[in-house]
Length: 63
Image (tube, rainbow, N blue to C red; front, side):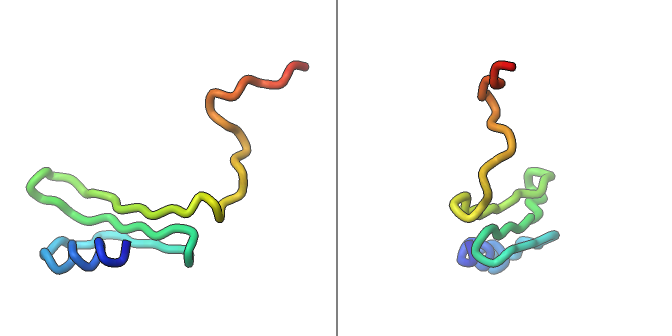
């Protein structure tokens, strides 16, 4: 992730927002004027996150 951010900055891309939380996640938004949009780079280590409260597609328990 750090190498990708460094390469985009080397290419002259503008980083408009970034955040990180140690080894859990790292993200950055870069402008891409040629497509008129920002592109998000995201690294997320799901092994370090708690289990989700709800799993999409999971059937509800019978009452």
